[in-house]
Amino acid sequence: MNLNQVTLPVTDMETATGFYRLMGFVQIVDTPHYARFECPDGGATFSLALTDEPFVNGSVIYFEHTELDELVAELKAKGLEFEQEPTAMRYLWREAVLRDPSGNKIKLYWAGENRLNPPWRVERRG
View 1 (cartoon, helix red, strand yellow):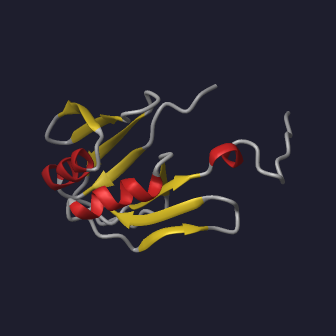
View 2: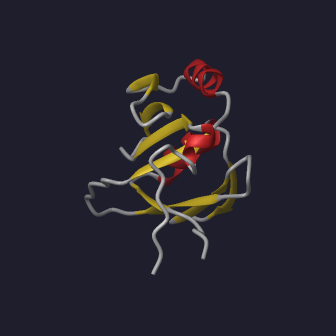
């Protein structure tokens, strides 16, 4: 089994799609109510679905990048604002935090080998 995608709710499709293209994602589906993006590395995708219903999204979407500090500097130069600068976290990742125009929380991070093989890794099946 493999994760296909994550769909985020948005309140303004035009503003949201512009935000994610500014971040460097490639838009591959464009309709008034749905958009899909391809990550520039690795082939993963995610989508946006327009909603006019009030929502609170407690989920966090993570995007990994080897040159985290450089990426954050580039995005800040484009006008994006961060809630947290790249910071070394207790769980051995380095991450920065921002929100999209609809308030969805995004973490840009670099974990290296610790993403799949942290010192506390377990393998439980069935």
